[in-house]
Length: 193
View (cartoon, one colour):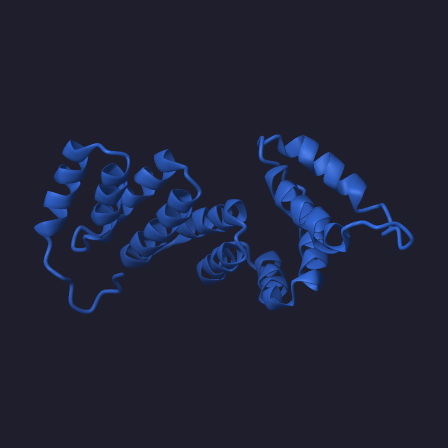
């Protein structure tokens, strides 16, 4: 999984789900109850085997009771795969579960079907945050810029970009984005950080 060889991960995780938990041996039960299904769920989405992905997600949820909303959201997704609100909530649920690859998949789908500019700007910013915490700066920068392009009255994305360049010690770029951000007044009536 960490090497992004999703086909191999899918193959091994699928095989692992067929092995029964050995009661008489000392093994990590969490690997059997959650991890193998969680890996299969993530890999299945990447290889586009959605039925296996759904099944594995549900199996993983049985071991993670706080994530039960995911099962409901996935049922809704199957009924209407272009429902922006549901796609966004799937992204949020996966992000809360620290499954950032899956979160980015559903946030991207939500971004693609948004019909209002303000929604699209918000989803772009949220997607940028997921890529940012995943250390995928290229995608994070793209969606931060897209968010600002769609809503230039909000400085949030520019501040995040400036902060990134400050962190990696590129003061000229930090200054450029921070200066632009300071020229934007606080937006009344908008959702900001």
